Image (cartoon, rainbow, N blue to C red; front, side, top):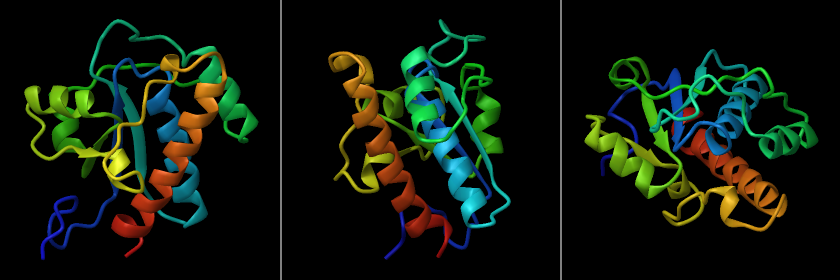
Length: 159
């Protein structure tokens, strides 16, 4: 049986996490993946981007910076950017954080984006933390992202 998330015999050396604005979920995913790559002594490029352009140049939102800091990660220096056509050639795997991101990536020409929730949450979306009340949503989203990235690495990168 072929793996729909990894091309046959392809070693994953680069990964791009994509959400809507690149100011809350995908920067957290980038930081978690970078830490995981370091933990496993992997030479891997991990980045994030958004499908929308309205936050380009901005730092991650305050609550994402706080939840990252509470988990020993510093994302304060990250800068939001919009995904580009070149990203589809540059990165071995493009990971969308929700189905809307996947749909937008496909409309932009990305052939094989994968849904992060497929790695531990039965294909569920990683929800935008702003759909929760206050800071609590950021903690929930962080934990979901971390769990899924851990599974992504175990299933697709470390094998």
